[in-house]
Length: 132
Image 1 (spheres, helix red, strand yellow):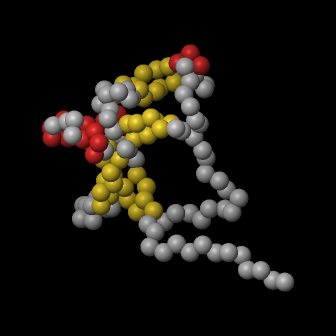
Image 2: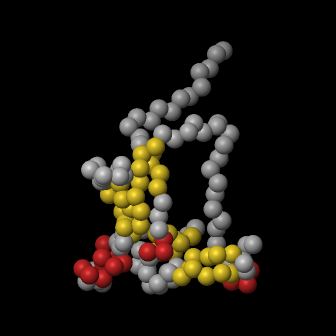
Image 3: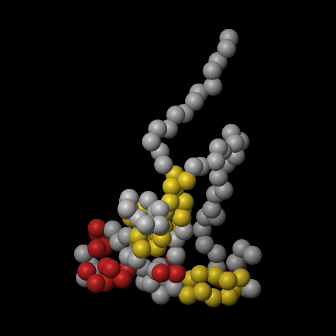
């Protein structure tokens, strides 16, 4: 018996690449810990961050910018969710939700069948027990 492999077809899916400047979040600091440069982001000072079951998450909004003179298709902004939004004035929200970066469309490379994306480490370690 001959079987055809299942083929997943994705239509109208656009991939983007870009970078986020996390140092724009509130009260961040770059420090040297055990010989490594580290970005410190205070969770309590940033209502755009929240602690979930598997890590600390940054709430974002991605907004389309079709007329960008630099070829960007979207920008990424930190986002304060509706439940927390009422606690801040318009000026405070603007300061807490900076534009962190821009995205441009790209053609993704074909992923090998056996290739799996790298997973991030879960949990947190005490400062004296850094993973390096």
